[in-house]
Amino acid sequence: MTGGPVTSDETMIVAAARSLRDGAVCFVGIGKPSTAANLARRTHAPNLVLIYESGTLGARPDRLPLSIGDGVLAESAEAVVGVPEVFNYWLQAGRVDVGFLSGAQLDRFANINTTVVGPDYHRPAVRLPGSGGAPEIAASCREVVIVMRQSPRAFVDRVDFVTSFGYGRGPGERQRLGLRGGGPSRVITDLGILEPDPATCELTLTAVHPGVSVAQVRAATGWPLAVADRLATTAPPSDLELTTLRRLVATMTPAPAGGSGG
Image (cartoon, rainbow, N blue to C red; front, side, top):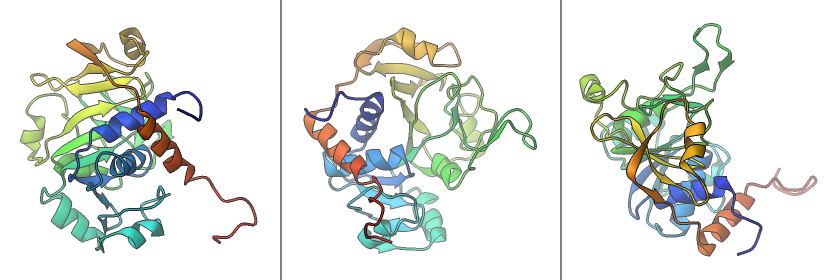
């Protein structure tokens, strides 16, 4: 294996990529979710169907897109449709298997905040980018996978604003609101994997990454984190996964000044 030791972010992205099965339809967000989805397509899931919010269906980019409007998505897609069709025909109709999301805050019931930090919406401590299509992804996909770094600042007991609905305050809330999607199935972090408890819907630690202790994960969580009776350890990235990931990330390196592409 070359290129230095495996980083926690690399372990997280590889674990996220492994959660995608070949042939699944995946609604992809930019950033780490996009990196994980494109890694999966290049390794164990060559028939993974990537849908981006901009209307690109079956995109097969040869590099990581910089945004949902990156031209490489349209150039490599099987079809390009309007944004209303993506949401009305594909997402809201239940035709998407997996939605990949991230956020600034996440709480014990997998609700996501990408709107504001602070108790006062009108005068927040931090105003975040907002929702985009994330609320619809969270509501309508058959399952949702959340990928984000874990820290007490990000993993809070209760989010300041519910941008994307996970399980609300517990069992039955998705059904009460009429949400068609199955909700978050797992949260993959740089420390391990959390999954909702079948009875309470509260996130529970089910796996740690190599070299990570339960104490580390609990210290990075803003609520008393439950731990599964049978705690697993994720397999480290293989040589193929790591080499492919690093080559993929390298495609986002800006060209030297004076080069072509302007």
